[in-house]
Length: 356
Image (tube, rainbow, N blue to C red):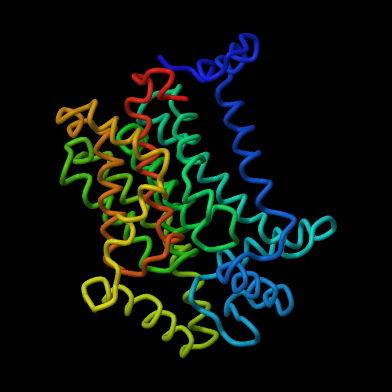
């Protein structure tokens, strides 16, 4: 079995790391997350408008109707704005407001690392979680976008929770139902009604492609997820509708239903192959390991639940993203989750040089 000690040549340090791979992974995650969060102004338009909404929320305290420069701004539900406002207040004594707000991004990325490790542990064994986390951490797409104050980081954490729940549904249906409902809720309250379709499609596909999920335990998991997700899904829209029916109608029909309808409408100028084109650099270095894992497992692997789950998630995530035709790399971060899981499958069979 490949151990992290094999990546080093100092015996004392290597033996300690071999015995404590989770500790090394936590240290590396902290070293990856923190430096990009503080000490700079908001980057690019995504951060600028997100922090603008957060700043307005801190000024007027109105989280039900997010606003930018005094005008309602309903492109995203308020989860990221509330989270960033909270961390901005907590860290305001020692950090500028925009740096404090960006700590919320670090929180959601840390959750993503945690749940992708738990998913890999559930699928591949106790000693594999650190590999999936480091594969995800190393991806170029996450390095580019993972430090930005944007709702997509919260969405990523919600999807990671959902994959973890699906991985353990057959073993612990009640706990997995709680995490599945929470993951769906985080997805909805961070991004709206379109992006969570990625997780819903995965949930629907799994019983079709594998008997592992055609069980009463999986049905219990899904049934429990519905009431758990409901508060996340309905409380803010109900409050928004009570505050302003017109604004609620704009959010519901323009930002959600129109986008859902647009998935089935193919118009000139949409780049439906954008995410396939950017994967070679966006998912580097995880994708070569993922391909190796699929090749090493062969056709028999497609009957293995540990392969079926990430392959199904990758297919549904790519399908929905490609149908939207938006063509922005920040929207492609979800595909890094199943690719990082697949990269774990046959990692231990690699020679040390390839692993390095």
